[in-house]
Length: 140
Image 1: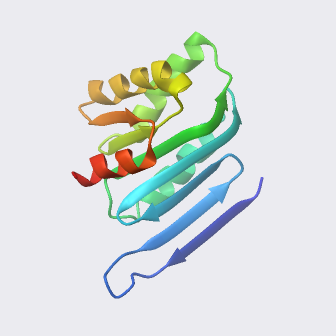
Image 2: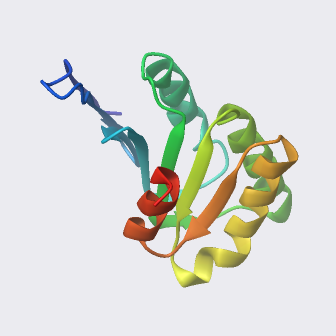
Image 3: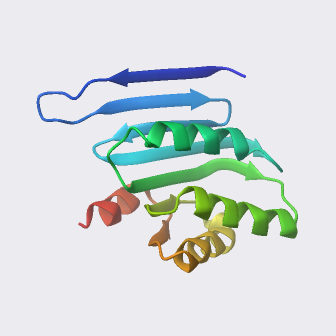
């Protein structure tokens, strides 16, 4: 598995740029929003390494906003695995405001992820446009 990490200090406006990537997952800090991208075939257990990377990297980032873009991912999970996955992700991202960016065929599944976040007292929503998700996170 290949990993690539790139981090730069804050620029003159105080904007920190950081990025990390591994097979099927990347994290980038973009204008105060932690952008997560998931792609490829995602099955049982495929969330564990990205979750560890997320927890390690975000402990050093001063942002509580997540844009989670899963439009390029193909999930192969049973009903039980879906339930397990949504609870796991909501716990890992506890304390964050999360915007999911999805394809129209992913809406039914992501609605349950939003509910899992809300059960923990967090705010989450889904969008089919990255621009709309960023605007919601920024309060625009």
